[in-house]
Image (cartoon, rainbow, N blue to C red; front, side, top):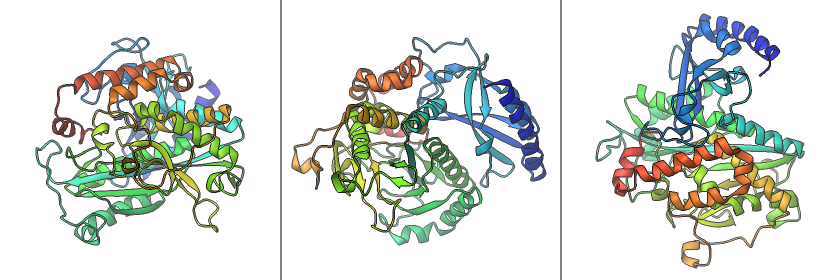
Length: 452
């Protein structure tokens, strides 16, 4: 970040700080998401926002090797007490938090003291991959679905207590928690988050919210904002939201599916082409690259030992490395959309979950898709029905260590991420696998469900 950019940011931040202070905003949280999938934060008083925009806020790089339980590991490039980074808020994303009166939020990019990019900054990685696609003449639109389970009491209690006994996808569940859900919709509306859907999901006390697509970095920012809004609103409502991949071992867990579409100018490349179900050749090659890389991508998008308690066949979790038209059992689901809806055609990656860092997810998916373009890939035949019944499709990794093996063999992801980020991710995955090596499925669920 150059000196001129910092001075411009300082001037703008002074104006923003005056506005926020006049509106009763006392503090601003600056967030980033670590490799374990936890949102970490530094906060500043509103009056200090100009200083943060000009000089940044200090933070140790060691958080890139923190685990889900706040213990630390190390890697070849990152680890230990030495070093310092500067966090710079993205003022374009500055948002007063409706469910946290007196506070505003901005995601942060991380730089070295010298001003150069921190090589392990996940958000800057997502920006680089977005720019890589743009240089190819492509715009990627993305959106995350957020699933969570709402409970009463402490997240770590042995048997969760649910505030509703309403059935899966049932109106009774909405009635039971009508005020809670209406308040959440209002908080998101005031924060200018466009909600597409909010509805009950399958598991007890489970809900899902989906929001409008955005550019890849914006989609990841929204994933953070939506989750923290749900967390704050739930807490103020006397409830505990659980975002872990599973809440109870053996049950259907929380997903965080990623929707994406590929564009050239105003044209959606997922439709009006000569490929499968109307895809253009560009869209098909991009999605084929994602499909090819899915076993390695699981170390990004399903990064916890708990993820593999969720990733079970016949649960709509996407446990097989296949694609299909409107097939909710396929890891890669293609949606054609209505004929009169140019933006409706898109693909959904179903095997990802809320333990994932959304910036790593969007960047890694773009890298995989562009590699598919470079290789001129085509998709195999689509799968209909449940692949677990058909028995012909390849199962995705069933453990974190197996996914890590695919990740470490992926030259596509190593090149895109760069060694410092790639190796710090691998170190965290290996350490978390060891952390839970002797734990039972229920112990893993209990230890992780309230951490994210």
